[in-house]
Image 1: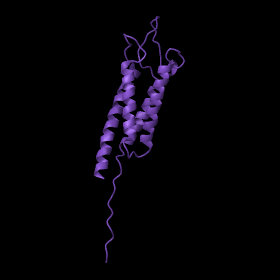
Image 2: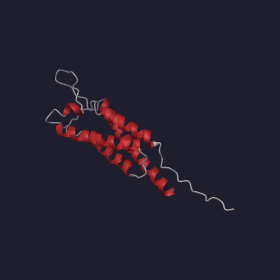
Image 3: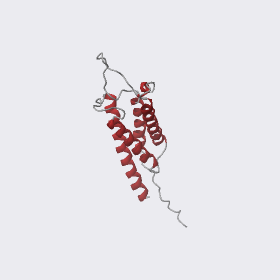
Image 4: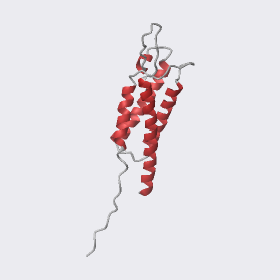
Length: 151
């Protein structure tokens, strides 16, 4: 009698990153509604400026639109990483590039002159999310490269 051929088990790509991409997508979208920089009006009352309210200001509409497009692009790529199995490095590399651009934009305080206002809570959380997404993308890229070389 002949034996049945042995099939080599092909391991699936690392899937534990899906929950992290989902969290990045949800938190990134929610943080787009927060204020990034602390500012005060002449009367001493805090001025609440979000990306959405800055769209109505002719001085800030370009910066706000670019930032919202960046946030929506990152959210879309993170949703792709959350809903499907990532087998190539395209998704994590895109997350790294988009998050790095966002982090640099936030830290450079685009549109403000010297002295720039300090970060508000939303801005500090967005910077932390951006650098966390950069770290997530780098680690996931390395993990995918190692997984592919094993297979």
